[in-house]
Length: 63
Image 1 (cartoon, rainbow, N blue to C red):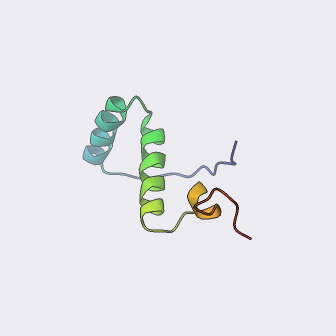
Image 2 (cartoon, rainbow, N blue to C red; image 1 turned 45 degrees about the vertical axis):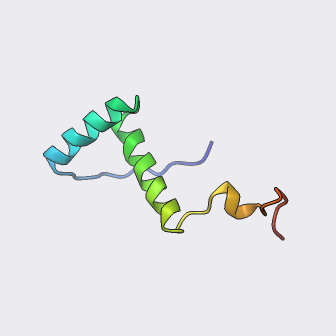
Image 3 (cartoon, rainbow, N blue to C red; image 1 turned 60 degrees about the vertical axis):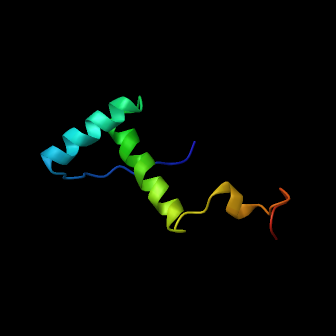
């Protein structure tokens, strides 16, 4: 399992309530939902490598 970094996040109460509803719909904790959302955006913007980035299209690892 990857190491995780803890930090405090201050967030607007209405935004938190919306995140609670969304997380509940997806069977996640609020923390898990926020982590998922951040990961999705980082991957979409090319700021976080995915497994596909480290492997070629044939499945072989890049050198």
